[in-house]
Length: 322
Image (cartoon, rainbow, N blue to C red; front, side, top):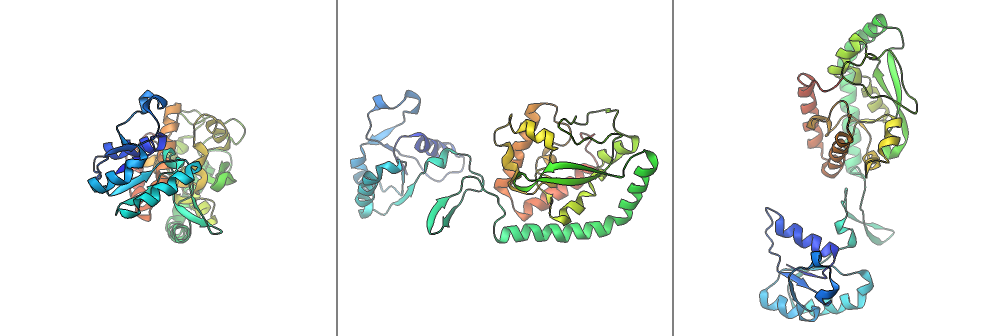
């Protein structure tokens, strides 16, 4: 392959191909009309020649792929290049400026007959949306029927061991950043849902003795299956944070709000990768968000099943939640 245009996205493509461990493509070099004095030193790469010599080089060296990394303002030049390559068998691709962007569910689509490329989108479109919601309804209905006696038992224990409501309701951000109310068994002696909320910490005096057990085993989360049935949450997805925490972290972590392109989950990709419990450092929250965005990129029903199985295993051996 060769790249036409030594700019940021072209260089990014070349480096990804060169350093990809399993790439079956050899990067030959660039074709560029600008002199090296007009290109920054750190961007300089091997240049095979001027663009006018591209077609001859492609024929001689049997180049299979040509990537045009040129600005759209260079349309006349692009048309000349395409015309010169008609006598070759190479595949031709455009490298849009957004190539250097961290695409989330990037895909091409048509809007009123105009082709566009998504940069950031939800993975749940069309049949995938139906599949995700259908699986949530089926599984949450089955689980609620299965655990109904346990829900009654925990409710009686919460009510009899400490004063206050059985169910703790708190505002969180849901799909598209809309506020939702989630349900949990109350595990603290206080109920916080204001502009400032203190995260639970180890040996937190606000946590009741029963609440400590419920939180450690994640039994306090069971009422959220009702949220799933309501359509506010999903069984698997980024864990929802309190509104106060959202407002703080969205100013500190780039891309934080992107996690709300899907419904929040009872469990998530971050939680089964060791990021369950307190986020006492910004680096921990950054790592959690990185996994949340990775989930958006990689989503499949199989991945959801893997996360559910890992969550069940963690409940019995993880001690990071309190």
